Length: 264
Image (cartoon, rainbow, N blue to C red):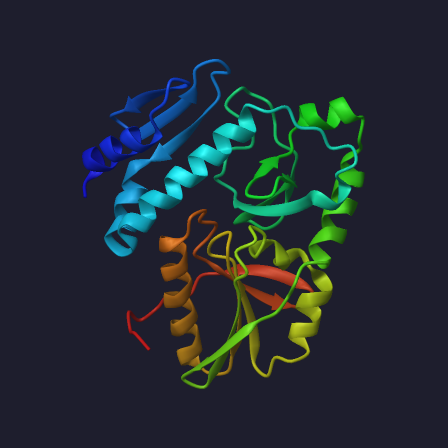
């Protein structure tokens, strides 16, 4: 399918009396907006075309689900009081917008040169990014949000699946709870993994729903992790970064690995 076909399919499946559609031909972006609130979602059509080539109808199903959930959240006022256990950090690329379309700044913290921390209120099937207006309305401090988010992310499962490729061990965390990449902020988890690593420890969060830890024990391991990370990044619903991080002495350092275009 091409962009026009994807556009028509999304308009067909998302059409109702409460929504309007607008199309930016230059950027190839379809915007779906609530008529009353004027809040909406921008969908990059080329990204969906790429995913459709691999995932077929599932690629469109995911977008439709995401847009419906997001528009529903936008149309409902959210409060933080009494919901401390539902506040989590979420990872995003540094290119991700720092404010909502309405100009309200999200509450964010710097992380690495490639990644930034946002904070979210979990709503079950989706979540709402916390912005400055929500903090002001609750009279909550940013430190309180940070404290709650870090505590809650430490409570999440860290069960891993292991795979060995060309003498290198790779561990995958993929629960699809929306916070897999957020586990990169669980310091005790990373330190515990570091104690098990035989070679160099590489950490990757190519998209929101996966965290990869590599125990790199030979040069081939770097090729494997480069290809693996790029593959996940290209197919993720919310891509973060195709770069990996070297984990050493409690610090994360982005590294660029030049893969040799081999498959393993």
